[in-house]
Length: 278
Image (cartoon, rainbow, N blue to C red; front, side):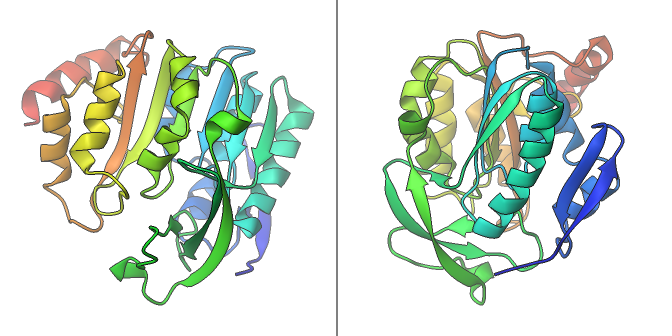
């Protein structure tokens, strides 16, 4: 698949940003000035000058660019060639501005090194899914284009403590974590943003992923404007209430770092939300 691009000004970043012209979700949001605002706020709140940030499923590089401009050393992973080209352009533009620096790895993050097949969404270019070893295509993507990509273990490409880890890999989150166990061990202070989408999750049960993170010492919550700590069982209950295919949400988690980082107003709202939401 090939698609046209366009470059738009993003005042909040202070630089131009290249997007996929026919994207139906991420591109239009960035063109209006922002993408995933709550996640971006939580992500940015934990970045310190000189820290390492790892972005798995970088897409066009929105989060990687945020981290570079905040002074971080960024390792970004994006396996789809035409999307990686756009991410590379955005990361290089941010590198010229600094003060941080980003490196793009043109591969998916997995449990082992090799290759895999990925199906490409035609509208939302953020919804590209690596297939399981069985090769079975998700039922909502039967007519999608399929290509081969490279898969690498994070631990083979990234070393040292990581302060912020973002994983948005459309169902491959468990596999990405298994290939990053060394990174997790080396990072006692870490903030994590991870997509939790039970329908698309591969090679593990949804509760298994949540319990893995809890056992690793993370305090979990939903990535919202006012997050509050949630048990894995409560997260599962909220995730299962929605549409089984479209359901799911982004999780925010920390260990060795403060959970509440968005100010007193957000913390008060989080308390009220925790009492209201079952």
